[in-house]
Length: 111
Image (cartoon, helix red, strand yellow):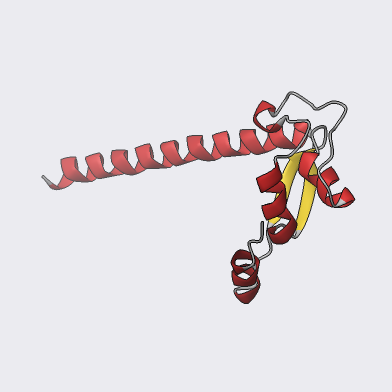
């Protein structure tokens, strides 16, 4: 199957598509490296949503044409990213509550 319009569109707007996979489940990475779908002996279970031994036919065909590179990340890196996201969410909530408190104080002072 050929998806020529998508890679062309990505090239025209100068976008690079970078895939990210767990280092212990490099299904796409290994397939692109071999230029064919491969079956991994074993896959990690930490990122269970992507823990497959072989990439599907259609995703592989699309990836061959659209993915410029694949980087592999460790479980520690994934944990750090999750933690950073959680901290970011917590900080947003704290900032919103401070702004609400300031608004409440201003309302009490001026009214």
